[in-house]
Amino acid sequence: GEGLVKVPGKPLEADDPLELVGMRFPIRSETDADQHFAVCLVEEFALAGFTATEVARLFESEAYVAPHAVLRRRGPDFVRAAIEQVFGRRP
Image (cartoon, rainbow, N blue to C red; front, side, top):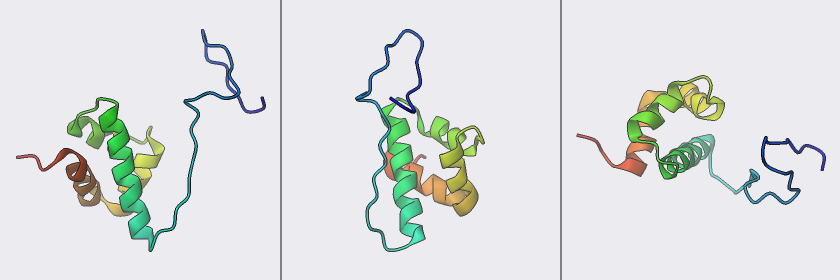
């Protein structure tokens, strides 16, 4: 299909179960959107096995566009709060 990218060693699948799918849902404000998005990103990285420190570094890296955009918009305290919401407060 159009838009499919061939991954070396993996045949193309039009119905790839790992295909990224975006969903929209109603929110009250941009602040709520950033909060939900930041926590979602942290949860995804945590489930992938990243530590809280590693997740914080991902938000700082310009190579990770979406997390870095949240950091630029909302600042490090906001990102730290999202990480703490997922991983718990660190001593």
